[in-house]
Length: 298
Image (cartoon, one colour):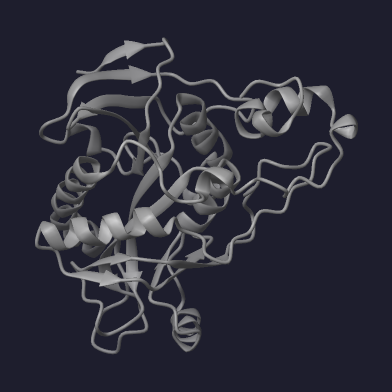
Protein backbone atom coordinates (compact mmCIF):
# COMPACT_ATOMS: atom_id res chain seq x y z
CA UNK A 1 0.00 0.00 0.00
CA UNK A 2 1.30 3.47 -0.92
CA UNK A 3 2.21 5.81 1.92
CA UNK A 4 0.25 9.06 2.05
CA UNK A 5 2.09 12.36 1.92
CA UNK A 6 1.12 16.03 1.76
CA UNK A 7 4.69 17.28 1.45
CA UNK A 8 5.52 18.92 -1.87
CA UNK A 9 8.48 17.59 -3.82
CA UNK A 10 9.64 18.11 -7.36
CA UNK A 11 8.91 15.35 -9.82
CA UNK A 12 10.04 15.76 -13.43
CA UNK A 13 8.01 13.04 -15.19
CA UNK A 14 4.24 12.52 -15.10
CA UNK A 15 2.17 9.59 -16.37
CA UNK A 16 -1.58 9.87 -16.91
CA UNK A 17 -3.50 6.68 -17.49
CA UNK A 18 -5.65 3.98 -16.04
CA UNK A 19 -5.34 2.50 -12.60
CA UNK A 20 -2.60 -0.07 -12.02
CA UNK A 21 0.28 1.85 -13.55
CA UNK A 22 1.71 2.68 -10.12
CA UNK A 23 2.07 -1.06 -9.54
CA UNK A 24 4.75 -1.42 -12.19
CA UNK A 25 7.63 -3.66 -11.31
CA UNK A 26 10.69 -1.64 -10.38
CA UNK A 27 8.79 1.30 -8.87
CA UNK A 28 10.18 2.10 -5.41
CA UNK A 29 9.70 4.68 -2.64
CA UNK A 30 5.99 4.83 -3.44
CA UNK A 31 3.74 7.35 -1.75
CA UNK A 32 0.30 8.86 -2.30
CA UNK A 33 0.11 12.66 -2.51
CA UNK A 34 -2.89 15.00 -2.44
CA UNK A 35 -2.49 18.16 -4.55
CA UNK A 36 -4.76 21.19 -4.20
CA UNK A 37 -5.49 23.41 -7.19
CA UNK A 38 -7.56 26.57 -7.83
CA UNK A 39 -9.54 24.50 -10.35
CA UNK A 40 -10.78 21.95 -7.84
CA UNK A 41 -9.75 18.37 -7.13
CA UNK A 42 -7.73 16.26 -9.55
CA UNK A 43 -9.12 12.85 -10.51
CA UNK A 44 -7.35 11.18 -7.58
CA UNK A 45 -4.26 11.37 -5.41
CA UNK A 46 -0.98 11.37 -7.32
CA UNK A 47 1.07 8.22 -6.84
CA UNK A 48 4.74 9.19 -6.55
CA UNK A 49 7.49 6.65 -7.03
CA UNK A 50 11.09 6.23 -8.18
CA UNK A 51 11.84 4.52 -11.49
CA UNK A 52 15.39 4.22 -12.84
CA UNK A 53 16.46 6.79 -10.25
CA UNK A 54 13.88 9.37 -11.39
CA UNK A 55 10.82 10.53 -9.47
CA UNK A 56 7.61 9.92 -11.40
CA UNK A 57 4.01 11.01 -10.70
CA UNK A 58 1.19 8.69 -11.79
CA UNK A 59 -2.44 9.81 -12.03
CA UNK A 60 -5.41 7.63 -13.03
CA UNK A 61 -7.42 10.09 -15.14
CA UNK A 62 -10.73 8.35 -14.42
CA UNK A 63 -9.93 7.92 -10.72
CA UNK A 64 -9.02 4.61 -9.16
CA UNK A 65 -11.79 2.14 -9.93
CA UNK A 66 -12.62 4.05 -13.15
CA UNK A 67 -15.28 6.30 -11.58
CA UNK A 68 -15.24 9.43 -13.78
CA UNK A 69 -16.62 9.65 -17.33
CA UNK A 70 -14.43 11.50 -19.89
CA UNK A 71 -16.56 14.68 -19.91
CA UNK A 72 -16.48 14.97 -16.12
CA UNK A 73 -12.71 14.57 -15.72
CA UNK A 74 -11.24 17.72 -14.18
CA UNK A 75 -8.54 18.11 -16.82
CA UNK A 76 -7.53 21.57 -15.58
CA UNK A 77 -6.89 20.28 -12.06
CA UNK A 78 -5.06 17.18 -13.35
CA UNK A 79 -2.58 19.14 -15.48
CA UNK A 80 -2.25 21.99 -12.97
CA UNK A 81 -1.43 19.42 -10.30
CA UNK A 82 1.33 17.98 -12.48
CA UNK A 83 2.72 21.49 -13.04
CA UNK A 84 2.60 22.21 -9.32
CA UNK A 85 4.62 19.05 -8.62
CA UNK A 86 7.30 20.26 -11.03
CA UNK A 87 6.46 17.85 -13.87
CA UNK A 88 8.08 18.84 -17.17
CA UNK A 89 7.02 15.84 -19.30
CA UNK A 90 3.74 13.93 -19.40
CA UNK A 91 3.39 10.48 -20.92
CA UNK A 92 -0.28 9.75 -21.49
CA UNK A 93 -1.62 6.21 -21.84
CA UNK A 94 -5.09 5.52 -23.19
CA UNK A 95 -7.25 2.96 -24.95
CA UNK A 96 -8.36 3.89 -28.47
CA UNK A 97 -10.38 2.45 -31.30
CA UNK A 98 -8.64 1.83 -34.61
CA UNK A 99 -9.96 3.69 -37.64
CA UNK A 100 -7.69 1.97 -40.14
CA UNK A 101 -7.37 -1.64 -41.24
CA UNK A 102 -3.61 -1.70 -40.76
CA UNK A 103 -3.87 -0.65 -37.10
CA UNK A 104 -4.87 -3.94 -35.53
CA UNK A 105 -6.25 -4.49 -32.01
CA UNK A 106 -3.22 -4.89 -29.77
CA UNK A 107 -1.09 -2.45 -31.78
CA UNK A 108 0.41 0.72 -30.31
CA UNK A 109 -0.01 4.12 -31.98
CA UNK A 110 2.04 7.19 -31.05
CA UNK A 111 -0.11 10.02 -32.49
CA UNK A 112 1.41 13.32 -33.61
CA UNK A 113 -1.89 15.10 -34.30
CA UNK A 114 -5.25 15.57 -32.59
CA UNK A 115 -8.69 16.48 -33.88
CA UNK A 116 -10.80 17.84 -31.03
CA UNK A 117 -14.43 16.83 -31.62
CA UNK A 118 -15.57 17.40 -28.03
CA UNK A 119 -18.36 19.81 -27.12
CA UNK A 120 -18.48 20.16 -23.33
CA UNK A 121 -14.85 20.48 -22.18
CA UNK A 122 -13.00 23.25 -20.40
CA UNK A 123 -9.67 22.93 -22.18
CA UNK A 124 -7.85 26.11 -21.16
CA UNK A 125 -6.44 27.69 -18.02
CA UNK A 126 -7.24 31.14 -19.36
CA UNK A 127 -10.30 33.32 -18.86
CA UNK A 128 -11.25 35.23 -15.70
CA UNK A 129 -9.59 38.37 -16.98
CA UNK A 130 -6.62 36.94 -18.90
CA UNK A 131 -6.40 35.87 -22.53
CA UNK A 132 -3.63 33.80 -24.16
CA UNK A 133 -3.46 31.99 -27.49
CA UNK A 134 -0.88 29.18 -27.60
CA UNK A 135 0.15 27.49 -30.82
CA UNK A 136 -1.20 23.96 -31.37
CA UNK A 137 -0.10 23.28 -34.95
CA UNK A 138 2.16 20.50 -33.67
CA UNK A 139 0.33 19.42 -30.50
CA UNK A 140 2.79 16.88 -29.11
CA UNK A 141 6.39 17.32 -28.04
CA UNK A 142 8.44 16.06 -30.99
CA UNK A 143 11.28 14.95 -28.69
CA UNK A 144 9.05 13.00 -26.29
CA UNK A 145 7.23 11.56 -29.31
CA UNK A 146 10.50 10.09 -30.61
CA UNK A 147 11.33 8.69 -27.17
CA UNK A 148 8.01 6.83 -27.06
CA UNK A 149 8.45 5.46 -30.59
CA UNK A 150 11.93 4.20 -29.68
CA UNK A 151 10.64 2.73 -26.43
CA UNK A 152 7.87 0.83 -28.19
CA UNK A 153 10.28 -0.66 -30.72
CA UNK A 154 12.74 -1.53 -27.94
CA UNK A 155 10.16 -3.60 -26.03
CA UNK A 156 8.97 -5.42 -29.14
CA UNK A 157 5.61 -3.73 -29.60
CA UNK A 158 3.96 -3.24 -32.98
CA UNK A 159 4.28 0.55 -33.16
CA UNK A 160 2.66 2.94 -35.63
CA UNK A 161 4.70 6.15 -35.83
CA UNK A 162 2.44 9.18 -36.02
CA UNK A 163 -1.23 9.56 -36.91
CA UNK A 164 -4.29 11.58 -35.98
CA UNK A 165 -6.20 10.93 -32.76
CA UNK A 166 -9.83 12.04 -32.99
CA UNK A 167 -11.08 13.05 -29.54
CA UNK A 168 -14.84 12.51 -29.19
CA UNK A 169 -17.01 13.51 -26.26
CA UNK A 170 -18.27 10.12 -25.11
CA UNK A 171 -19.00 8.31 -22.91
CA UNK A 172 -20.95 6.45 -25.62
CA UNK A 173 -19.04 4.86 -28.48
CA UNK A 174 -19.65 6.08 -32.04
CA UNK A 175 -22.72 5.32 -34.10
CA UNK A 176 -21.89 3.49 -37.32
CA UNK A 177 -22.68 6.65 -39.32
CA UNK A 178 -20.31 8.68 -37.16
CA UNK A 179 -17.57 6.09 -37.43
CA UNK A 180 -17.84 5.95 -41.22
CA UNK A 181 -17.72 9.77 -41.36
CA UNK A 182 -14.58 9.88 -39.22
CA UNK A 183 -13.02 7.37 -41.61
CA UNK A 184 -13.55 9.87 -44.44
CA UNK A 185 -11.63 12.43 -42.36
CA UNK A 186 -8.63 10.07 -42.53
CA UNK A 187 -8.11 9.88 -38.76
CA UNK A 188 -6.13 6.95 -37.39
CA UNK A 189 -7.53 6.30 -33.91
CA UNK A 190 -10.44 7.51 -31.81
CA UNK A 191 -10.53 8.21 -28.07
CA UNK A 192 -12.16 10.47 -25.52
CA UNK A 193 -9.48 12.27 -23.51
CA UNK A 194 -6.12 13.14 -25.04
CA UNK A 195 -6.81 16.31 -27.06
CA UNK A 196 -8.02 18.08 -23.92
CA UNK A 197 -4.91 17.03 -21.98
CA UNK A 198 -2.63 18.09 -24.84
CA UNK A 199 -4.09 21.62 -24.98
CA UNK A 200 -3.70 22.17 -21.24
CA UNK A 201 -0.21 20.66 -21.17
CA UNK A 202 0.86 23.06 -23.93
CA UNK A 203 -0.48 26.04 -21.96
CA UNK A 204 1.37 24.77 -18.89
CA UNK A 205 4.60 24.42 -20.95
CA UNK A 206 4.75 20.68 -20.23
CA UNK A 207 5.97 18.26 -22.91
CA UNK A 208 3.14 15.89 -23.86
CA UNK A 209 2.92 12.71 -25.91
CA UNK A 210 0.68 9.69 -25.73
CA UNK A 211 0.79 5.90 -25.98
CA UNK A 212 -2.47 4.90 -27.69
CA UNK A 213 -3.44 1.28 -27.11
CA UNK A 214 -5.63 0.02 -29.96
CA UNK A 215 -8.24 -2.19 -28.31
CA UNK A 216 -10.65 -2.71 -31.22
CA UNK A 217 -11.71 -1.62 -34.67
CA UNK A 218 -14.36 1.03 -34.23
CA UNK A 219 -17.81 0.00 -35.50
CA UNK A 220 -16.96 1.01 -39.10
CA UNK A 221 -15.27 -2.36 -39.61
CA UNK A 222 -17.46 -4.67 -41.70
CA UNK A 223 -16.19 -7.90 -40.11
CA UNK A 224 -16.36 -6.76 -36.51
CA UNK A 225 -19.25 -6.67 -34.11
CA UNK A 226 -20.16 -3.30 -32.60
CA UNK A 227 -17.72 -2.20 -29.92
CA UNK A 228 -18.43 -3.66 -26.48
CA UNK A 229 -16.88 -2.89 -23.13
CA UNK A 230 -15.99 -6.57 -22.73
CA UNK A 231 -14.04 -6.64 -26.00
CA UNK A 232 -12.20 -3.44 -25.15
CA UNK A 233 -11.21 -4.68 -21.69
CA UNK A 234 -9.98 -8.03 -23.00
CA UNK A 235 -7.48 -6.44 -25.38
CA UNK A 236 -6.68 -3.65 -22.92
CA UNK A 237 -5.55 -6.23 -20.36
CA UNK A 238 -2.97 -7.53 -22.84
CA UNK A 239 -1.88 -4.04 -23.90
CA UNK A 240 -1.34 -2.67 -20.40
CA UNK A 241 1.77 -4.79 -19.80
CA UNK A 242 3.26 -3.51 -23.06
CA UNK A 243 2.54 0.08 -22.04
CA UNK A 244 4.23 -0.51 -18.67
CA UNK A 245 7.32 -1.83 -20.46
CA UNK A 246 7.30 1.24 -22.71
CA UNK A 247 7.02 3.63 -19.78
CA UNK A 248 9.90 1.96 -17.98
CA UNK A 249 12.06 2.20 -21.11
CA UNK A 250 11.05 5.82 -21.81
CA UNK A 251 11.83 6.91 -18.25
CA UNK A 252 15.18 5.10 -18.45
CA UNK A 253 16.33 6.89 -21.61
CA UNK A 254 14.83 10.34 -20.96
CA UNK A 255 17.62 12.86 -20.27
CA UNK A 256 17.43 15.03 -17.17
CA UNK A 257 17.04 18.28 -19.10
CA UNK A 258 14.74 19.19 -21.99
CA UNK A 259 16.09 20.09 -25.42
CA UNK A 260 12.74 21.05 -26.98
CA UNK A 261 10.84 24.33 -27.09
CA UNK A 262 7.89 23.23 -24.95
CA UNK A 263 9.20 25.12 -21.92
CA UNK A 264 8.71 28.39 -23.82
CA UNK A 265 5.38 27.67 -25.51
CA UNK A 266 3.55 30.39 -23.55
CA UNK A 267 6.07 33.12 -24.37
CA UNK A 268 4.51 36.08 -26.25
CA UNK A 269 1.05 34.46 -26.23
CA UNK A 270 -0.52 36.39 -23.33
CA UNK A 271 -2.60 39.17 -24.88
CA UNK A 272 -3.81 40.90 -21.71
CA UNK A 273 -1.62 43.66 -20.22
CA UNK A 274 -0.41 42.62 -16.79
CA UNK A 275 -1.97 45.63 -15.07
CA UNK A 276 -5.43 44.54 -16.29
CA UNK A 277 -5.19 40.93 -15.06
CA UNK A 278 -7.10 40.47 -11.77
CA UNK A 279 -4.81 39.74 -8.83
CA UNK A 280 -6.59 36.48 -7.95
CA UNK A 281 -6.24 35.22 -11.52
CA UNK A 282 -2.52 36.02 -11.50
CA UNK A 283 -2.10 34.31 -8.15
CA UNK A 284 -4.05 31.22 -9.23
CA UNK A 285 -1.99 30.89 -12.41
CA UNK A 286 1.40 31.63 -10.84
CA UNK A 287 2.86 28.15 -11.57
CA UNK A 288 1.94 28.64 -15.23
CA UNK A 289 2.41 32.36 -15.98
CA UNK A 290 4.64 33.42 -13.08
CA UNK A 291 7.86 33.70 -15.07
CA UNK A 292 6.16 36.09 -17.51
CA UNK A 293 4.74 38.38 -14.82
CA UNK A 294 6.63 41.01 -12.84
CA UNK A 295 6.44 40.43 -9.11
CA UNK A 296 5.27 36.81 -9.41
CA UNK A 297 7.45 33.77 -8.70
CA UNK A 298 6.60 30.55 -10.51
